[in-house]
Amino acid sequence: MKKLADIGLIGLAVMGENLVLNMESHGYTVAVYNRTVAKVDKFVDGRGAGKKFIGAHSIEELCATLERPRKVMMLVKAGDPVDHFIDLVLPHLEPGDIIIDGGNSHFPDTIRRTKYVENKGMLYIGTGVSGGEEGALKGPSIMPGGSPDAWPHVKEIFQSIAAKVESGEACCDWVGEGGAGHFVKMVHNGIEYGDMQIITEAYQLMKELLGMSNDDMHEVFKKWNTGFLDSYLIEITRDILGYKDENGEETVDFILDTAGQKGTGKWTGISALDLGIPLTLIGESVFARCLSAQKDLRVKASKVISGPQAEFKGDKQQFIDDLESALLGAKIISYAQGYNLMMEAASEHGWNLNYGGIALMWRGGCIIRSVFLGDIKKAFDNNPELPNLLLDPFFKEKVEQAQAGWRRVCATAVENGIPVPAMTSALTYFDGFRSERLPANLLQAQRDYFGAHTYERVDKPRGEFFHTNWTGRGGDTASSTYNA
Ligand code: 2AM
Image (cartoon, rainbow, N blue to C red):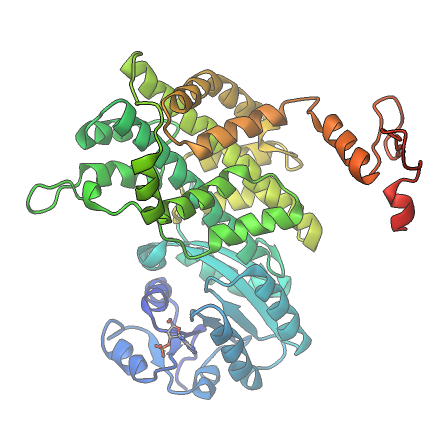
């Protein structure tokens, strides 16, 4: 009898093709199917020629070629196509078989689909796959969540095709129940927005304030990439700044300054607002892209509104070193905030997230991969209950060391009228986070004044609420009394 396939894949676009080529190169037999069926033969006879692929021309045929429990992975356009394929596949499965969505689905959809598929007796996995087309082929970061019983059946395949860190560990582990995998992938993308934004702020300061050339900045990023900031995004920034086209022109200078976005940063921000988590750096990074996109309006404003003339007076090398500190401080804040969001989501949705494991999954293969994530893993290995990254002794010290230079950068940028929304909002968060007392006492007084919303007192136990008749008019009735 012909060998059955270890796993089936629906969706032969570039990501799907690369991922199955990766699986095949690790010894797995893969059955493949695509909505436009002609692509199946094209792939099997083309990039897949001579390899262990089984081309299927229908969903029924695909499911019939799979080892039990069947594993059917979809890499199709997020949204309705995923629901559509789930319904097409389900009739050909048996209890215990597994449907896997490897696309960029929004986590509430994955929560819903996990329940739906489980109710039919099958298992479901929604997994983030990061690293782009190249990552899919050579080793992506894989973040699976869904039905816990499905994990032992896909663990070996997923971990063998995932990126590996130096110690050999795979950048793939079980994230958690329901939509946890896609949630963590979403936060990954939000953090990516933040990392990119702070790099652009450093670039803007070097360019506009220090008047540095692309070649000079290329050298600075090259150096930074050998230190604590060592990461994929610093590395590609170095290369972009050093890139010249066939005419010797520096391409980066010709690119229109309007940022695009596909929505995962926005989802992360919305999720933070929903859960009440101060995710300020990522939020500012999304808004910075929005402001960049208002190009016509900015051009008009630039002609009529004046500000300070940027002029640098200090020690240039010192300022470049300060910029490295600012990047470091802001980056630590961004990850502290991102982890804060994941912790809150875990408690909201009942997910048992493995925070060190998440750092390891992001350590290699994906866009935010960096040496720094190894230290985050250590922080959670040392204390799995760590409530905030800033309270880890290593990161506390790093951020304290960074703060002097980071403050100088923010102050200089503000004085010179150069926008650094992510670096400054991160610093402001840091100062708020380390404040025992914030001015919310006054805010509570205002709320009580105009809306009788009541307040708690510093000289009374928490949970007791008071109302003051601030004007002498009106009654003593608190709003909670008449809301009841
Ligand atoms: P196609 O090759 O038939 O277009 C990435 O776009 C993958 O998602 C492709 O395999 C593509 O199939 C599939 N896809 C895109 N839109 C789809 C839809 N509306 N329904 C089903 N599959 C879709």
